[in-house]
Length: 247
Image (cartoon, helix red, strand yellow):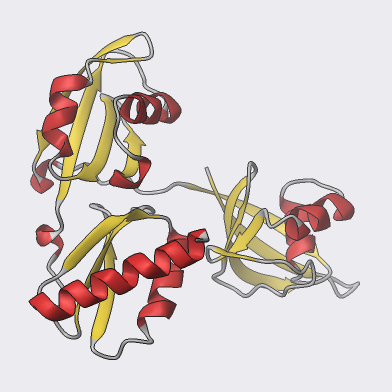
């Protein structure tokens, strides 16, 4: 069974469970691309609906909920634990994730991991908070102390941006990637064809794909940016555009 078929099978099982019980079925945390696929798939079932919540306003990885139409759960009903992992020195995201998965926690049960001044804030499926408190005492070479906290104690971490102004001949995706990351046009085109570029979390396969204002573009291993406003045209007919590049 392909990964796509496996996803749709899980969704169908959750729909059936929710329809029979009349209750919400909660699934794993998933990336934005899976969230988009699920929303398209759920449209085939007029009596069911889906929603996603990751614990914070700006969460990327979110827990999936499937429920009878018109009965969307409240955010506090999602079975999510928030764990503050405190350390005396900064923690790297990869080290925190490595410690969690090495302890036996499946990646699908882990939401966003936000590094903070005190260490890290982690979102996981209930009841993993208690498990982490007992078993995660060291990350890399740093001793840590983990504690499950309430939603009132959650730290909201907003993304930060750097404004980048570029002049481009068109809004083709390969042209933008070329301008933002200082690549050759052929390198930018190759990234697109290799499915390493996404627009609004959906893979783009054609270098000539035209982006729109407000689109979020992510380039694997390079970063992510938002297509901003067009500020004018040059004498040669090129477009001046402002981008918001994730810091």
